[in-house]
Image 1 (cartoon, one colour):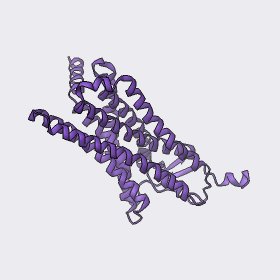
Image 2: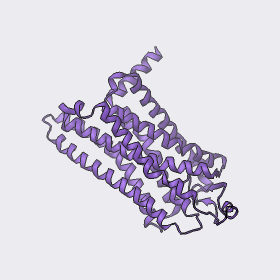
Image 3: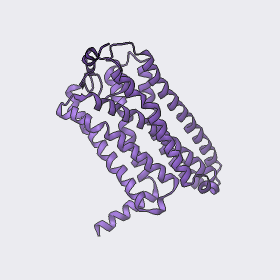
Image 4: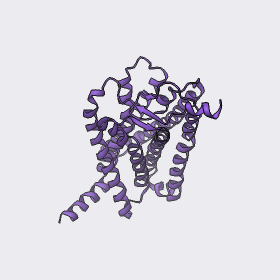
Length: 314
């Protein structure tokens, strides 16, 4: 293929369709989406500010929570503002390079989110099952290495995605049947056979998700076994309440992600609007819930936020 012929198959822009069949409701759908985004930004920024300001919170749990908050901010900001422009302003066009960049941020930071959930599960396990060795096992150096490993994994596995899509010719419709540039939605527009490209993406997602999910589940099984052995009933109930809220957030993240994955692979009969709404949920709900579950329900953070509010009001 010559350079001249190649250029005509490389689009300058794509068009985002939004949620097929629900176009008339886009304005109303944008309201709860915007509300969740505002809560996610305010909540995660608050967590970062509180932990940074209070040295007593420079512990493994809160350091991992800060990593999760940064991931949530990037993940939600890479999708929500552009999605609201589509819903409220009808701005459907997105530049090809911007589309590839958005796709990379979405998939790589979703993998990082999964990795930080695993890191926090490991921290919870060590804190409950090995409380006397917690500080010596999870030193600041090891925490930094765990965080760097999670970030490098997300970047390394999903950096090929935009590179692969840039090489493909596009001469079909340039309308993406989605609210954002999701890999499988974009690759369907290519002119050539993309079986190997799809298989790579699905394999990477399945390996990362299944490995993280298995070790998270294994960690919480050990945690629950240790909790039920605690001599104090009050301590057991408190630990169960904390673990239960954490598990709920993780289940929301993984259940919606698994549904989206299985829909791409097997669920061709699933209505497009159902698929796209749930695909949005696993990008919107965790950044919205994480500050509430890990922040407000955490006593130390809650006390520091309330004390700051009292000082400002006085």
